[in-house]
Length: 256
Image (tube, rainbow, N blue to C red; front, side, top):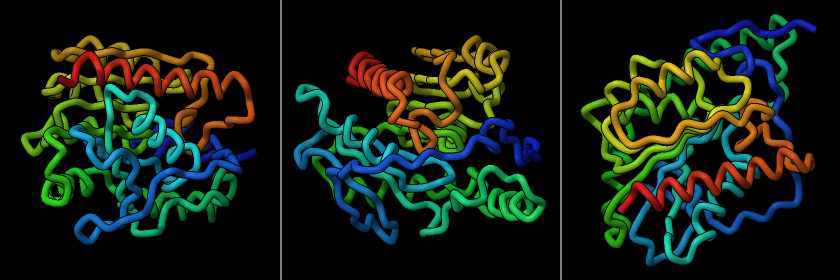
């Protein structure tokens, strides 16, 4: 079977592992507009901490929404309100493009990545957070979480002068750049799968100058905490849950 080579900085795992659609989960949140941005919103109305979650290239998937609900509701002493903005304006990567085993699929995928550069989201995030603050005055501080493609957004924004976030998390991030780690200015957690380049993960960790936690879930595939997580597999389900518990533990320790 033909596979899509690394493109636009994505590793091959990101480009070739097909997403797994789980069924039956009923999201606890609602879709609302924050400014002009349609967003999935979940969590208690009186939360004092907010998280902006940046999904992967497949957009709103049950696994990603379930993860947001877990972060919002799993700890009564550490309540978060989660916002997942639709950066793709209803046009995520269609699942039928994966695996990209034809020239047509590869061309479409490459064009999509070319039109959805993570830097575009980084530039738009400060205004989005400004709108969030105006609409949610009870929330006093903000964190960010990104999956795969969204993990690159997290790295870029937290290493820039535009950063409005207090804490940051990246799950199986794409395009890991150790050079960016040196500039990250807030506590940072990176949960890698066994398919991210181990040398890049190790070097990234070595260059972080902030409180951090870096862990590799060695037997998990790229995307296991988001669209590609096959929750019908007991091992994946267990590690999916452990991943979100690890995020909550890190937030509890490093987000006053």
